[in-house]
Image (tube, rainbow, N blue to C red; front, side, top):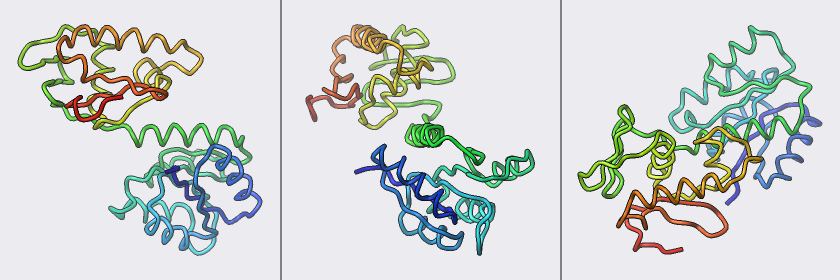
Amino acid sequence: MPETILLIEDEEDVTDLIRYHLKKEKYRVLSAHDGVEGVQLAVKERPDAVVLDIMMPRLNGFEVAKKLKADPRTEPIPVLFLSAKGETESRIKGLETGADDFLTKPFSPRELVLRLQALLRRSRTTILPETLCSGPITLERATLKVTIEGERLDLTTTEFKLLSLLAGSNGMSHSREYLLEEVWGYNNSVDTRTVDTHVRRLREKLGVHADLLQTVRGEGYRFLTDPSLTKS
């Protein structure tokens, strides 16, 4: 199912422009033309992200953001402010209301898409507790200590970050490009064989539990607590 973006913007031409570029990226796009309608639609649809203008009728963007962040049903939804107001004060006020990013008009549609993609990636990433237990593996973030059935594994910092991300994703698969960005901080231009090499080394260190780290054909990698449940 495609991810849903709610666009709260009262200018029709801006709405049409953003909708066009988001649909090109295969997003589902909802739109509201004033703040009250936007809040109601956010509560009803629970979109994956909100693009929010500041100067709007009925409720301005600051008021909308406050309402969204005060409601537990919509509080986790990332919000990107989009406005002609580029002053530092407006930017700070927007971020203080709980917004996650701020883009000033006129804007590049491509930059808007990239910023939304970054917000969505962050919102999808599981925040790991200090100690993560996944199947036979226990990871301690503070000390970078990893044990498997009580036996300590000797991992590099990068191997620890890679295993933590995969083990903390509840069986979700991640592409090589995503792993490069999240673990190494590289962009897509970097050779994805870097990921394959580290996965191979991790499997060697996991030994008899190597099957926990699975390849998903055409997608990337995932970590399963019981690899017998699903084979790829």
